[in-house]
Amino acid sequence: MIIGKKTIIRPMEMEDVDFIHGWWNNGEALAYSGLNYGFMMSKAALENRFRHQITSSDMYVSDEKMFIICRKDDMMLIGDISYRNWDKRNGSAEIGLEICDPANRGKGYGRDAMAAFVDFMFRHLNLRRVELTTAESNKAGQALYYKLGFKEIGIARDRYYDSVKDCYTNTLYMDLLRSDWDEIKESILK
Ligand SMILES: CC(C)(COP(=O)(O)OP(=O)(O)OC[C@H]1O[C@@H](n2cnc3c(N)ncnc32)[C@H](O)[C@@H]1OP(=O)(O)O)[C@@H](O)C(=O)NCCC(=O)NCCS
Image (cartoon, rainbow, N blue to C red; front, side):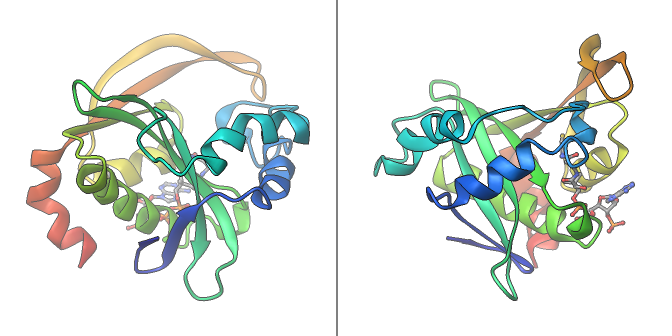
């Protein structure tokens, strides 16, 4: 398990699919990603998607993996965090973070989980770079990422259709190098 100050990140289990299913089909919780109706995914489709990840004992076979974020004090599930597009030749991967229950946002859980997970990715997967994308309008996400040392590396204009606002939005690209993380991580993780 990955142990932060306020959160614990653990591998996903089949029982978690119920929770993810409820959340991923909730347009209100997914409003930040411009998905007015959520992902509209059946439980069976989710189970299929995650079965290999959950049942495989080898962390290094897949280029993507999702983990569950729990509150440290009561182990309640509050979100998910994942990597994908793990480029093993170049030591790079994309990271995604969601505090699913809006009631648990703004309480420091996102920052704590992201810091612990970034450190895990650099040390456990031996990456030299992590990257992410976010809607240019997602100021909460960006504030968090800047605080952890991520830098903006580009914008793709009108890349994403937002079905909440019924408009196209810009996608912001950010990345963090391990060398930069190593310089600041002590002050962040302490
Ligand atoms: C974005 C998200 C991950 C942030 O996690 P969180 O637990 O809510 O944020 P935290 O409480 O850890 O706050 C960390 C920093 O983010 C910033 N932040 C958090 N909420 C904010 C808001 N509503 N507006 C502006 N900045 C905000 C603050 O700078 C904060 O630092 P501070 O506490 O020192 O002021 C979370 O709100 C979330 O999951 N939102 C929906 C999904 C999402 O947007 N995922 C990211 C997709 S790229």
